[in-house]
Length: 363
Image (cartoon, rainbow, N blue to C red):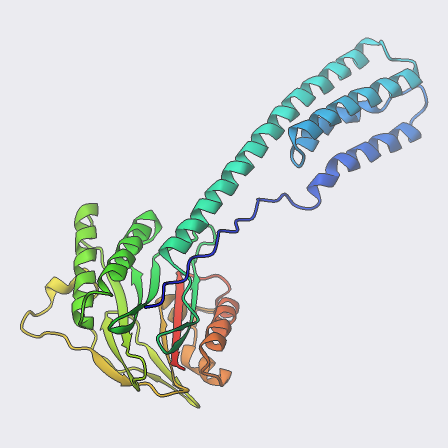
């Protein structure tokens, strides 16, 4: 069995200040020199430089901020010497104010640099968490071409309540895509628990229904541990055996998968079971069965969360998923996912919920 691809190293970007901020000290210096050239020689305009160290602290490090303080003091003394007022009392107080401003500016710059470093570390940890919990899907696995997309509704939350995974097992390729009720850290914890349970059980559980039942119990345990009696997760599980012309699907209260073929977009008619975590509420005398769906070459199964189907435009109209895909005219997984990544965002403007998509087609 081929090893799962290792998650790429996190590439967190260091927080940056706006491009115009580093030019503020230069602008202040230019204004001071212009004022010095305009006012009479008897007046020293160097008092404007008192604020320069604090302004420099917003974009430069402690060393440069300290250098800006020394430069400001030196220039103030030169300008006062030119006006013949170097030792007058109000100039002395300007020097003292500039020095105090430099001390505070240097301290501010040190604290800002420290916070920026801490934020970079936090983002690196968050990206590592995302790539550990939601691993990148392989482009090819077990005779399938696969493309995936994940986008949280809140940009600062790299991991939300949606989940997906693709595992190549001895029973074939097994796929999970789901949506956990709730948001925030509680939902992230449930996502991690469900994915951990799926990755462990997918390789050892023969039946797809039995696999879904194990995930159901995992959510139920998580609900008990967290004291949340209303916790559940909708999910759809898919299984594909290499060389087969069909897939098996178990839908646990999730959005209906779509079957994309040339010229048609059709919902996959499969029995809908109760969501994960609520399976104990269903009838015990009616065991579930997976739905078999024909999947020929050139046909694609699209799994998605309600972040796609419930995205709305400015007038409140839901995103027309099927018509948009029909207009695309392609069933290639990478093209379908790439199209949705752009089109849903442009249509909705601001996502109301997390968004996850998986597209799969036989090679």
